[in-house]
Image (cartoon, rainbow, N blue to C red; front, side, top):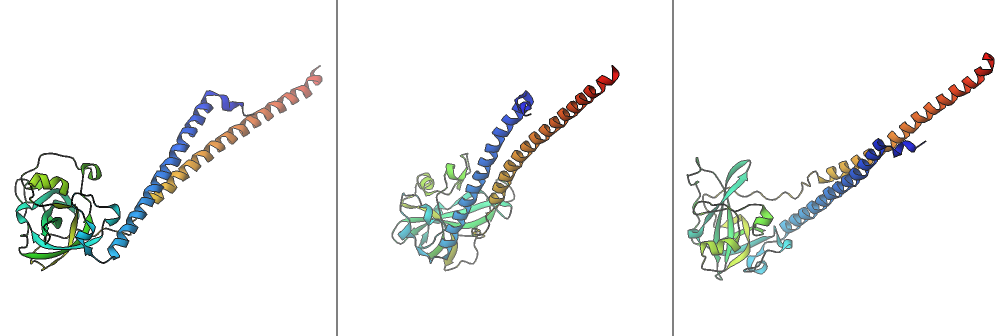
Length: 269
């Protein structure tokens, strides 16, 4: 009854099912693992945002990468901005508007420096014009901000290309220190400024806080892929049963016709 499964058409269909179902299952697990990573990421953001700000020098180290568990942790530091080495970070968007991040070293009271992302400013009218950037505060300031890891080509996906003087593509002390020839040691990592004392009259737009609630569609996508895999298997089994039932009906019809012929044959003699 099921010899039809050995025909080329059904063999090709079986091979297609055998290939597609594992792919769909793996895609489902890939999306599920992305969901788990997002949950862990959001938990880290939520936990670190609830913690009291700590002195930056207790968490950061000169020449060392920021640890994963310290990302989004609030830290404080006191010092003076080195406005001569302030840079603009290109191609940064807020509210779907392209602009720049304003990054400046803060030379702390112990002589080490912390990169501070002061915030965002919009592009100027033309690419050749310099955007309007609020002046860097002078004198001693105390800053509070969220810790972020140095951006690299690998973790940011931002490649290298020529940029105008005073502009950079990535926020990284490892890159800026030699490029700008900074005369002081620089902590690994940087902060997104959230508070500053004394508060200046005009500042760049604040970088939005991370969203620790949005988990994205990854779990839904995982379930969809698994449903597709089950549906494909169910459809394949149904096609087999339908084909077998049709063949069984045809054979039954042929048997009935043959029996009828045998029954009528003696009457013709």
